Image (cartoon, rainbow, N blue to C red; front, side, top):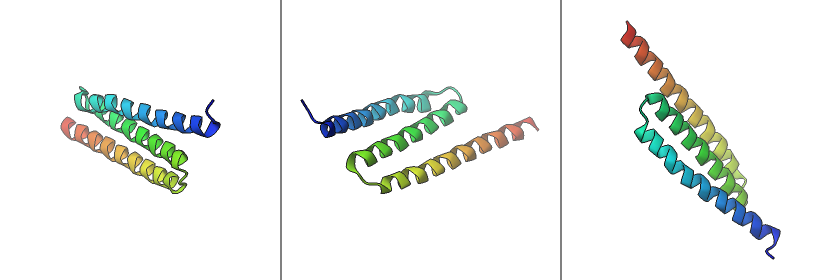
Length: 97
């Protein structure tokens, strides 16, 4: 019977592989999405999954500084979604006038 460390490593690696696999479907939604809002949401989900993968790798290899990288990446991701949404709102307001 495998020990707890081996099971933990297997679980973390399988979690990272599953998240990487589901990013593919989000990429499909981002490229094939009929509306721009679908593409923004898909990009936001992709960045959230990347943050989760970095956090899982942080646990797997035992490097605590990767959690800081996750936080910085989350802030950058949030700001990019806000900027994109703001540009869409300004574009729609410009078309109405």
